[in-house]
Image (cartoon, rainbow, N blue to C red; front, side, top):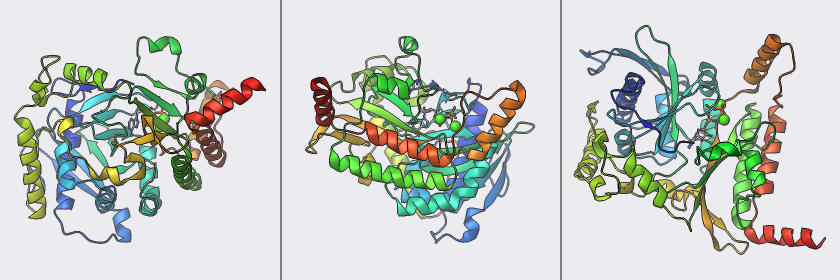
Length: 432
Ligand code: ATP
Ligand code: CA
Ligand code: CA
């Protein structure tokens, strides 16, 4: 995994798409949030609104740099979801400002989806397949209910579902979701775990070239890694995972993973600071003098705080929010956000390891269940298609969602144990 990605500026091939995405989000989110809050109705779940942007602007939409169409899905549901997840509306808008703000991770998975980070690294935009898009709309009620009943859910937090289209271009569907990894802490190792070993290996030889790569189940087992959790945290963690997985099973979802970023407190933060100074997170998108932290503290920080206040005011007074303005916000200036009240994101944005006696441990885990929009029927059809092409059984055979989920929970439960328990087990096996 490339941690910081490539900055998307005006010279980037996906600049226009990124610009349109952000302009559309900014417009539709401020439009919905400008209204007086109300309870959801059944119709809110199926709602969709279409907007045309062009360079001149019209009575409905302000002028934009490019001509494009934007579709906003279930805006009221997502407004409620954002509020459930304790996002500040002004903060959300500031983070998703449409200038120099994204960095592109490219397409890390096999699916062809693109990932973009908001400039302050808090949010991820993921482009999704039409099938995933349709599926999210279909399960939105269940997802919403689950999030309400489970404030501490480990599932991806969805903040918005949209579509952009440029003239003669194809339709691009995308979701906005939480970045599990913190802007201010170095992630020393990343694992994407499914609880299976078939094809679940990152080639260790390639680690040299790409030391930040996302490792998989086999790499985890080979390192004899554990989620070092004492009894209290382990119980809470597994309990929540069971509830989340039950929903995924009922909705016939599979192929999701537990994404785990590990911050080693004894190693601290140095690498990331160095890296950030050299790459994306600079005010104005100019290259900074490497090593000079003070350069990052420019007046734009003050500017940002002012801008957020202004936006908050505008939202309150129901004024339209101007689009296309540059607002900068540096990760280290971010206020402690309200995520700290959530159990698994409460220790500096993550979940701190504990010992058997519940004393805090030496690692912080940033984790969650990701990629949970793949319906079983979709995979099956795809396998069928592959089989038709090659006339042989495909190697990675999809297992039904119930079994997938059970295996997932069993694996995660098996790898969650405190250091003391691991040591005892090792001693026991040596004397045996
Ligand atoms: P595939 O279907 O081939 O697995 P995908 O395109 O659906 O791939 P994901 O599995 O969702 O992609 O994610 C790919 C990688 O992107 C993850 O392994 C992780 O490194 C990163 N990633 C995805 N979601 C998040 C998130 N919410 N926070 C941080 N990193 C993420
Ligand atoms: Ca995946
Ligand atoms: Ca996927």
